[in-house]
Length: 368
Ligand code: SAH
Image 1 (cartoon, rainbow, N blue to C red):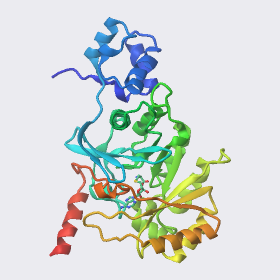
Image 2 (cartoon, helix red, strand yellow):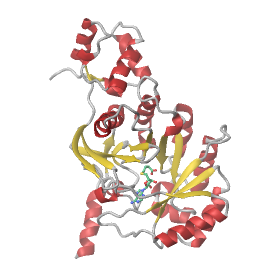
Image 3 (cartoon, helix red, strand yellow):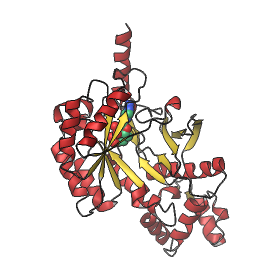
Image 4 (cartoon, rainbow, N blue to C red):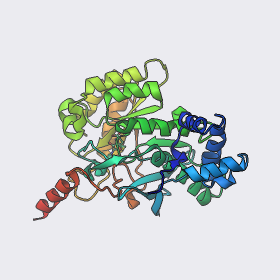
């Protein structure tokens, strides 16, 4: 068997410095190599001209710079671009780029599938295979940056924002996600400020506290229901970390920043969580934490029974929140013609749970 090589694309500054020290090199080599990999986009050590020939040869022998492999690349009529990426373990993940007038947002996956099984999410229905490595997470940003530079023919920063809102629950893959977000922020790599990185979580309370210590980026929380009874059905994780505990954690997260707000995501499911009484209840909750609410029109996928709230119901819900003094926006649906919208990312998960099988079984029963 060949000896294992180290994939340098996935090393954050600390890990990279440790690596070079272990080779008997100075720690500043970390900055040099990170710049080549992430800023310049080089994946061949022979191009790293400010390293000695011997060091380049050592790196070629012992290391690699390998992002996930692209399986397919789709462009939506609205400019949204979705890539399907192969990852070891007979699986594939998805990432999405959403161009807007003033920014370009990359939506990044953190796991192959997801363990949480929210009742309205396509990823949940695929089951779970494994966590992505840091290399596979940051490798998405690396790939997007270089492919978009080709598409748009510019060296300007095209990916201005990253949202950890692709497949998976980022806080269930804490260490790798934090390392990847550190590389996103590193000035020698992608140089994104912490405000331009948003992590979305279904509410893994202890990890929200840990995130504040390790890497305090912008936080979005998938609330989706204004009371525990309903949230237990939509987001089963709520049984473990109910709303009160979740909102307490949110308050701790923004405690020492006067201006910071938590974004609360709320998927609009027709007749399920979109009644006036829900809007009133949600308004009350939102008075207890610095918040803004982002209403997400439900995106459908094969085999799911929920339907999207009509525009008039969404607007009615928004107006109640607004009249109660809550900051509220409605998320524009992007890329749904190529199944790239929120909750539609399914990739190709070699499921190790029995969840995808059960979901398919239920669909079959419905047809028969
Ligand atoms: N696990 C993370 C990231 C999930 S994806 C989390 O739960 O926050 C980002 C957002 O899309 C979440 O708010 C998620 O609940 C929402 N979402 C999932 N399925 C959806 C669907 N079918 N339609 C619209 N939004 C959906």
